Image 1 (cartoon, rainbow, N blue to C red):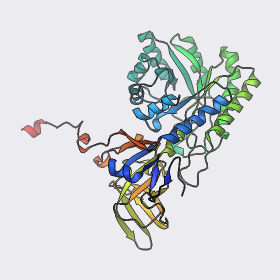
Image 2 (image 1 turned 90 degrees about the vertical axis):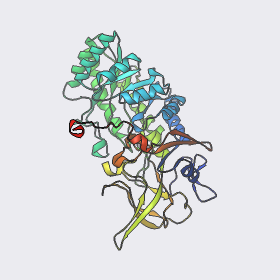
Image 3 (image 1 turned 90 degrees about the horizontal axis):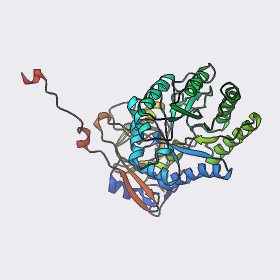
Length: 440
């Protein structure tokens, strides 16, 4: 059984995370419950940052907060000296509420609203990643209105397709994101922004996909961008201060996954950029990257209480839990795979094959197919590993199920960082309908 970070089996035969028994967590906070191993997050952040420091390369490691955004996780990111990537007004507001320095916030998105851009400018955030021509016009208009100047990157799609699931691949030519690198769009965008006093163009951004287990894609993307930089230097007399090569660094969900250590990705990126600037006789740009899943994904474990069971002879045994696609939609959305264990029976052989069914009224609400577990009884505690990225952030109230609580564990202590929703919360924004028909 593969245990991540500080997770271990304690003397009671229970799963322990961050020095805290998961049964104690479930008893105190209830289930479903997201549990985050803060030590693992800190170590992963330091792994990325130290690789740049060791190479004496100026860089920003920005936590891609769409993976999991909350006041507490953003405070941890600040403590570790990370920058922050946000993709909505809500994520930006959360960052500001957490006291995160606005100068280290980068704002992404393919359809930022006037209100979102105005918020970003009013708080003087560090960078806006401009995604399309409409945004150039809109941002220019707001800058002029506010008498502000925006520091920007242009997002480019380099035509590199990562080896990953189609729904989370973003760097190929046919993408909703960015200016295409090969059809003249980037040159047109550069020309426009350099002519406008509203912008300070820092450089370029690309992102080739997600859950990537090799460095080849990052090298190819950098190759394509630097091929163009020589042309842009001649055409526009422009040399970028910043090159942002995005994120997408993979984690281990199951034994099929073989991710690299953070420093391996960083070292290869640095090597590639250094070789390119030598060839082009350019100064070394500041390198930005955006790990999200790789910082928090395998730091998260979701705890569930086992409920009903159904056995279909010679076909399958279903084990139902008190959560499902309302707290983890990834298996239903794009067939994500997970490993699991019974947290209260860690030393019992996991040799019974069962399928984990969620409680939502959907046949597709299946969390894991055919996972080995001990003989389970109602009330047992199921731990599903590596749910720290896109679990809570994509959670929902389907079937009007309240969203779970979130707990951080570190050094033997547990802290509640997001309260469990109540049934009262479910109807809090509802309003009664007073129609003429009803009142007649």
